[in-house]
Image: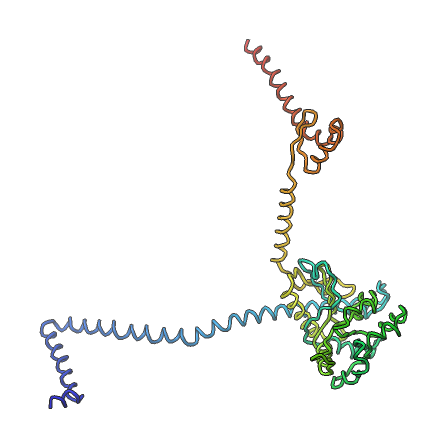
Length: 427
């Protein structure tokens, strides 16, 4: 029976409840009813409500909605707002440029310095100013390819229907690949496919060896692609004049895969450049010009998307100081400037001047009884020159240092002359 009483829970409840009631009765008998009610109310209020209110509602609410929203949304919203503001700034600048060109073209009596062609003024240029040279001392013959969202060449090809010059592409392969690739195979599947001509490098040596023939041939094309294996020999074959224009500067592409000519590789590279790339020539200097397109080819939103993409890529690889957008004969509108880069330039300039002043200390030399401070160059000249001619060589420096000594002598003379007068007055 003892074991059953320990295991069964029915007898545990009656044993526990009477003890509590008995303890309450004892405490009530010893103390007054007022104290018991006060103690019970104090215990109930201190143990019950504060803990439940502190542990329940306040802790549950911060862990739920408030913590999830502040951590996730502010960062994304800030970056999105910055990108949106920058994009809207570019769109606004392009809209103002477009209005400027339209107002200028309305006044037909004004003289156009560019030969009277109104279409030249609608070409949009992006100008980036770098802290240092883009290429250093070496000249780069390979154009820089920027990723863009809207194809410049497709829009150019579409607009060339009403232009004097048609949009045409040239592909130069090496001599061993002659006749292996046809132009129709590369443009197959492209919407509104452009005109394409394929030649080998040997034809530039034979058919277009003459300067006039080569110049007229290259003038037909708006984009030149070349096998990356012959790109280093093209400056001699095409001539230096071809690299003065972006249209005739060859862009290297990969044509082989596993040591063999691959039509798939050529087509992929060709479509990638035609649809998603924009070439630009990297200059030796600090100012770079990128041709964005024409107001009649792309909308301001599309031009702004391409400009924003190019600026972002330039900022990643170069310490860009400022970026502007302009047309051929319009004022430049600023889009971006980096105050940190400008501060670095001023600090570097101050440091250079400080080092220059420290590297050229002055040396004190006595000439005709007068001490003169000479620079490192002047002191070396004084050592080589005839001592009798030093006074005539450094006469200007002697004049600057002599007045100080003359003033000291005048003060001494005035002091000596004033002393006797003071004695006479006392007498």
